[in-house]
Length: 204
Image (cartoon, rainbow, N blue to C red):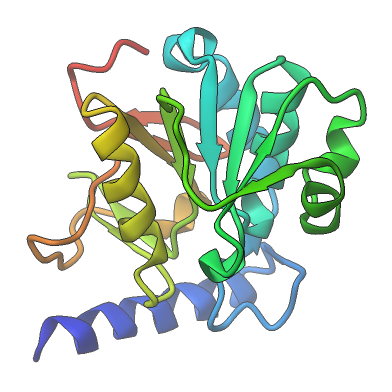
C-alpha cells in the first residue's frame, strides 16, 4: 500500500471517529477539512502556558477553524500574528495591535483588520498549524493539499530554529503514522488534556 493511500485511510478514520464520538464541531462536514473539535480552546490555552509561547514575539498560525482560539490568544497577548490566507490565495495576513482580538481571529476579521502581504520579512518564532492526524514522533497528516508543509518550509528560510506546534483532539494523536522525507514535523502537540513535547530541545 503506497503512502498516499495509507495517509488517506488515517484521514478517513479520524473524520469518522470524531463524528462518531460527537466531538466534532462546525464547519460541517468535517471530511476534507482540518477538523474542528470540542476542546480546541483548551488546547490553545495549554499551548499559551508554555515557555515557547511566552518567549515568542511573532506567531504564525494556520487559518483553520480549530486554531481560531490560538489566533485570538496571540492577539490578546500582543503578539504579532501572521496567518496564511486560505489556500495561500492571497499570500499572508499580518495582524498586530488590535483590540478586537476575537473578531480579528476569524477569517472575515483577518481580512478586515489585517495587512495582506505576498511575502513575509519577519522572523517567526512559533508556527501553529492544523492537522488531521499527528504522531508521537512529530509526523503530521494534513488534509492532503500540502499547504502547511509549504508554509513551514518557507518560514524556516526566515528562521532555521522555528518551533512548530499543532493543536488537535486527543483522538487525533497516534503512536505512529506514515511519513515521507518531504513532510515537515511538529515539535509540540497541544491537546485539550495535555502538552506533548516531541523535540526535547524545546524548552516548554
